[in-house]
Length: 211
Image (tube, rainbow, N blue to C red):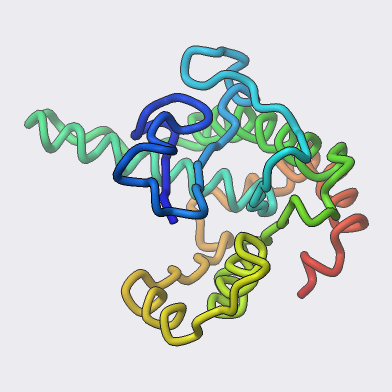
């Protein structure tokens, strides 16, 4: 199996290294994407992706608010690391106003993502798509990994020892409680922006969200 992260590998789709001598023996090629065009409407970071049944898609989804919190923490972590590397003053603590501005922008992207890949995807329940609930991955990592392997290689038997070894080397991190977030008091306002779409996802994917 080969793995290409679009942004840090070759920035081409499909990956330009597929078929190369180093990857010639690999049967499965994964290419990661956040579908950035949905976030920025700009083809510079990444051109649009079409919803198609011509290739397999592993779609990871999550409630938009916890997902946005995760991104916010990551952005701030990177800013601190950059300041430390450049020997600059540490960025000041973020404010509720900054969080709300970031969250409203990010929620628009996450709503578009769910609409495109879940709600409006005619092949979501076909053998070409595997919709992965992030919470299920965290709470049932071994079963989820085995399910992904079966999706990618339906004619192969899952090697449980290798799956367990892989998770031991790269364990799945536990979910952080969103209510511990410093601006949790804003959630009721943000829920108004995404509750309708998430309710539609729950109705369509209830067995995946509640599992």
